[in-house]
Amino acid sequence: APLDPATLGTVTGTIHFTGKPPERLKIDMSQDPVCAMTGGDNYAEQYVVHNGDLANVYVYIKDGPAAAMAQPATNTVPVILDQIGCKYVPHVIAVMQGEPVEFKNSDGTMHNIHIMPDVQGNATVDISQGANGALDSKIFDKPETMIPVRCNNHPWMNAFINVSATPYFAVSDADGNFTIKGLPAGTYTLAAVHEKLGEQTMTVTVAPQKTGKA
Figure 1 (tube, rainbow, N blue to C red):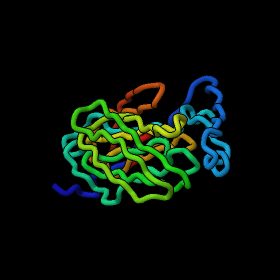
Figure 2: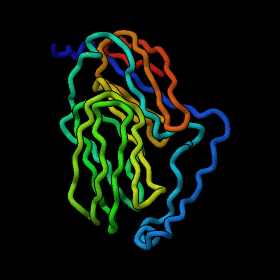
Figure 3: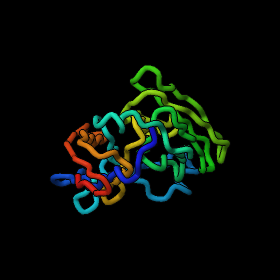
Figure 4: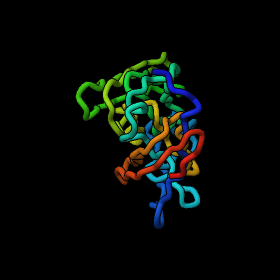
């Protein structure tokens, strides 16, 4: 059933990193002259921390009211994973199950997209894309977190795709912030997943036309 906007709320929060983060290592791209000439400075993205806050964390609703868990997809625009400067941009993306991901190559060199999900029912992908080539689109049908994406041509390239069971999810930005809107009022289990640090959960309560803090 359609949700009444008057009954919906929002969760907003910040992902904090405790302690000193690992140093971001500069990547040597000299094996491909195009990458070396056009890619600029490229740094590892496993830990992107700014003022103690952590980017690239997938945040999703793990459990909650039936009205939320049964909501269909609301996004009709494909999420794009691009290849720019010989790295995947963005580093972490998220979609709802059944929604398309489009793969794009904006570089002047050939790239490869190699994806091997752990969850049965999600598409295995191994495609090559020529320089500034045409888009390829894939759909992932089952919920799964941090599906790795690799380039067989450039071993330093990596990204992650997350597939949500509901339309309620986000990825923390450069300052560690995230927002999930349109949630039916109720109590939720909110999960945060990082590619190296794993998953943590917390309970948050959403009130109509209010913003809960996480």
